[in-house]
Image: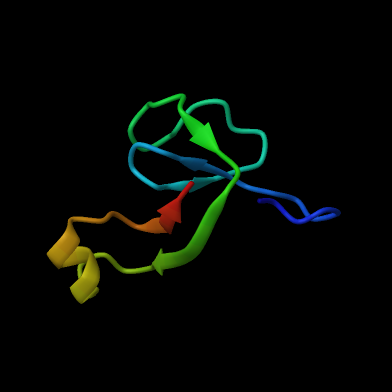
Length: 68
């Protein structure tokens, strides 16, 4: 559940991308199934050097670990 008084970001339930607060559609996969409730996040800065990015096929960006 989002904390009161904080800006909450939107998270795509389809690909788990963390988006801007005013997003209505995922800029990565195009889904409009968004949530504001997630736990943990992963930041990929350089997808070519990232072992996690290479194993999971994750692009550069901010990604939620779990979306509710």
